[in-house]
Length: 136
Image (cartoon, rainbow, N blue to C red):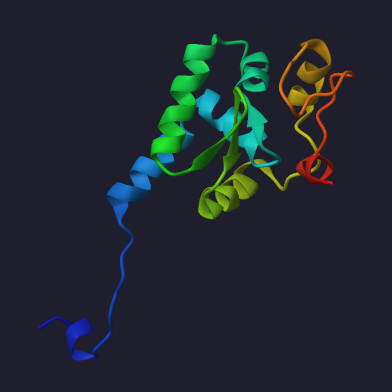
């Protein structure tokens, strides 16, 4: 009999395999950049493509990995798909690793001004209104 059994103490150890798998998802630089953007507000693939300077299939592959892990969720609006961070534990980790969210991601704001995006969140000036503006 172990001392913990004798004292009737239940030890709960973390699921190290699950923890390792989640950390592996964050260990990819492009996925980490995607999550840094998505923790601020939902974005469409076209904005993430511009940010990463990668082709759409590559960006979609990274998004698929994150979606299958349950870290992000997608929402279709017309012909566009918008992604958002859906995992509060990962959001807390990102705040620990990258610091608290302070406004829009600077790289995505820069790219929004450079690309002509036809997504429903972009208006004629190239700015993306917040979700609150969209529903108002």
